[in-house]
Image (cartoon, rainbow, N blue to C red; front, side, top):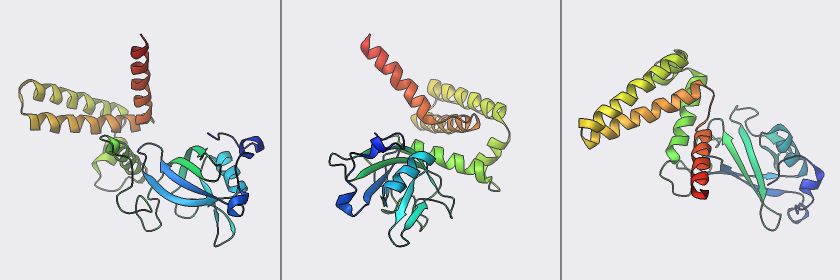
Length: 215
């Protein structure tokens, strides 16, 4: 993993093979979805690492361009990893809005290509909640809930938790699914209201699992 814009970090990369450019495959840091393919020269990679936002080299314009510099739909960098030959980059990032210039989440079709996963949609829902909170569209329940403040969101989480317990104690399977769905949604809103991300919860759960496995 390349983590800093140091010359020593880039020495093992084969820019010469592609005429000074490396293909850069962009993958969603949370869902694993393949988002787009761009190209980076040494300066673009250095700028990406320094800014912590993805910067490419435009072959058409022959200049650097930061993804989202006109649309606002940037890619927040998580990490960069070269392949075994050092002539291709895997860039993990979190998008701020649609990645494709046609408005899709991925340049490879309406449905992002990702490894199968049962909870990938939680990351997508987390992004939607963040977008609603930023844009505050009229009529949006999510935007109104976030605007009401963290205490109100916490109250809703408590209410939904009780609804889950009641459904589990005496309701149908369909009611349990419905109430758990409501609870998960409101928990994601609570995390957004506190400025926290789901990945921190996952990291905590993984750390607990690892500690349990070692004991």
